[in-house]
Image (cartoon, rainbow, N blue to C red):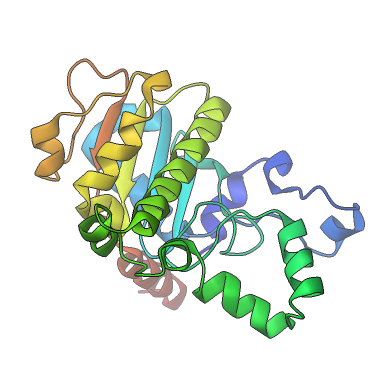
Length: 247
């Protein structure tokens, strides 16, 4: 279920730049958070109507994090790939990483596969860089006195901005930018910092609406509508299960 929503992405987005037999063996970019994005496709159509059918970019920012670019509410590109390690920096996961770093660590640090998995999945991301916490709220409270907390937040925001730029280019612009999941729905500071770096897209926030976590947080001068939309992966999974059972 969690990868199913991304079956609509073109082959060029699924392909890995490896020898072609990797593709034939099923090694490809599957994408994740599909249940969340599928729920968003339903919710955004109800709330925003035809606007949501245009160039929509959804940012699922929770303990795990990814972006999904949609046209006509169908996935056309996403930041996670073969595994849930890829793409954005996350709470404890590294996100996109030069494979040469992994090779170097395994050669010089004598890391086993299991130890490397522990490092990349559970000891990296916001927690690894800050040495304090995987929770942005904790890092925001300590960034003034802890340079590593500030660096972790700066890197987290930069990675989100970079990937929004990349997916925005694929879409040819952004009509609707949506924040969802725990951080996306509830952390106004992270939303503000991300959008402050999106001047290329002429995105502007309404400070009061953002602070209130309103459904629409962009101002009237913004070239794109910026929205906050709750997600419900559990409901989506239950709906699929009910359909399979014929209920």
